[in-house]
Image (spheres, helix red, strand yellow):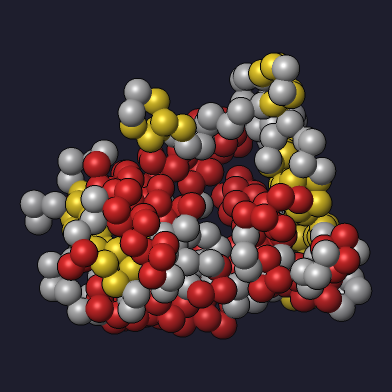
Amino acid sequence: MDKIRFGIIGLGIMGQNYLEIYKSQNPMTHVSAVANHSENILKSVSNKFGIAEADRYTDYKKILDRKDINAIVVATPDFAHTQIVIDALSAGKHVLVEKPLTISTKEADQIVEAVKKTNLKLQVNYNHRWLSSYYEAKMQIQSGAIGKPLVAYARKNDTIYVATGMLKWASKSNPTYFLSAHDVDLVRWFFNSEPIEARAYGVKEVMVKKGIDTYDIIQGQVKFQNGSIATFESGWIYPDTFPTMTDSFVEVIGANGHLHLDRKYESIEVSTEKGFTYPKTFLIKNIFGKVRGAFANALDSFADCILNNTDPVVSAFDGRQVTAVLEAIVKSADNNGETIKIK
């Protein structure tokens, strides 16, 4: 294989990031075709990145029919992943899929079985594992530096613009699926243990008044097989005056120490006449004309696993386990804190 030839399905914010990196940054990758259901978005994004008209599709299945394409990126909204992923695997394509893998454990199980059946590569893009601070946290825990991890607390809270302005499909999702997915993946990775039950509560007030039927904020507590527990908080009603779009924090308390990971500042704060901000730089940042950071590293890692025939860092099963936790948290919140077993 001289190059991995990608098809990108979904050309929103994340899809364009995939397109830029795989088209022009990795010498071993090439973007051969793109798909988006909106003709206007398809045209504007394709023009921006120089995608030929013959390689643009509103029907994603036409990309899967192409023999020259080796791998597919699925960057559609979370509720629209499953069928595309299964179709891509059935067509003999490796798959990189945005988080979460699905919003249904049943559907996630179908994907896991499809991966086993086809023996193809699938990576869920839980790119936070490639952030140097989170990776270092994993190494510290693995070395025994803080003893057995006993408790974790993780929160991701967005400003209200995300759910009301940036996303057009917030009513079809909720903050747990959209935000807690990364944190659940990290904590499961840190604990090196599987989740067994969840209990959660949620509030619906602000978003409903804006005509968007979804949760404002959800807090869930998850118990793991090794006896450790973790609390996950996610919401998207911070005021837009908050100095960063996302407030992200993780803490792990062990028997002999603790880890404190606060990504709100990311080493820089900026004060100008227009306001006070904490610019995001660690995950994805254009530096000297190239996209750098954990997001780009995760994409390079997926390309490497195809070229070298190695296992993805985040497997279909890893994605399945995160989905099982997310689904249990939401189900518990829907049922006023009922304890939900995770299987």
